[in-house]
Length: 136
Image (cartoon, rainbow, N blue to C red; front, top):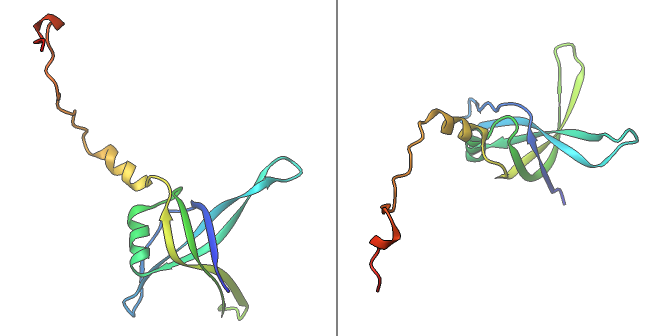
């Protein structure tokens, strides 16, 4: 069984990458606070590399940004590649199958600030006094 579920905040604004095959993806680090404090009384944070593909990646890039709180579930994958200097690099990441948006999008709140707010029209008429109201 290879399943993982994490809740944390996205550390940087997201970029959607389109590959030559036509598939799209985005990768990001998820900042996850530990549930305990160290000897100095500080809460430590882990940074977990996550990868998202397809429509889920498109939705994530569209609705979330740096600081967005998200829940991810998926599986852990390891891969390796060789650098130009012939050193081998090992990568461990979470390949996300499902993402839940747990906080209001920073992109949505930015868009709301740019659109002028319209005052809600009055739903009731005001009267000078209660004596003008009919009694039934």
